[in-house]
Image (tube, rainbow, N blue to C red; front, side, top):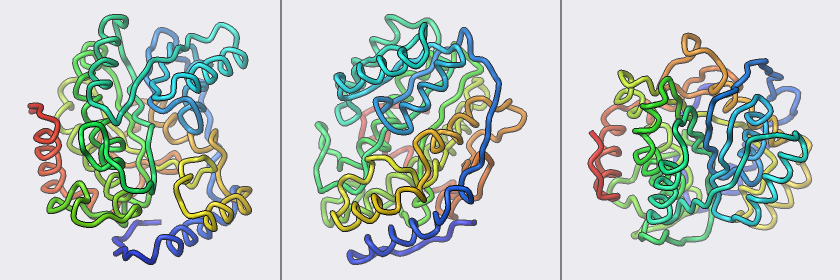
Length: 320
């Protein structure tokens, strides 16, 4: 299904999410049962937000394939529990947890420094962590929380780890976006939602930013051996929507059978990690373990370039 732009007003959050749920009418219709026997022995991966949900399932699959996996998480107690779960599932798994708060650029810097001090290679950076439709709040550095975590945090993390990714080439950056990016627009005049805030508008802006970032990143790293992919995991039964209104949470719970499981939600991320380069398009948008058509706004080169420049300005970095 091709995505089309949709305008949001402050009354349509519940209606839109109900439509999304309805479109996910059957797991058997939306889930492509994809598998691969590719091994990842000797490879190193970082998965942000890997203490639960899609991130945890992604980390577990990579560990089963022999990769060394670093769970980059804000909540270290939950991260350590996730490590224990993975090791219990597969004895000898090479997994560990490291502290990373994407809402704090100081934490991102400390995490990156730690990685350079302990890791010789990095083959896969999976920008998976995210927040959705939360009440208005800001990151430590003053960015609107969804823009700050979903886009700017991962933008900065990728920037800091790029030298290691280049050193380890061929390497890949996979960023988890959403089909809801089709509703989004980059509000350059109010990027931080300081004039007006609506949780869905801010969320879909951040998911569109993920796709634009991936598109521009692929262009800039094409000669460096680093490829980039944006993925839509599907409508997945996780706690990502915990900030939505209670009636909607109850609806999601009632119809949870019709949603993808976290393991199924990880399929497309894993597809973009394990599929040969020759079968993928760097900068592309993937859904259902296949390349998909993103919204028109997601392929706007001018917007991608401007967002890149604005992101660098906000973060105080020079990334040419």
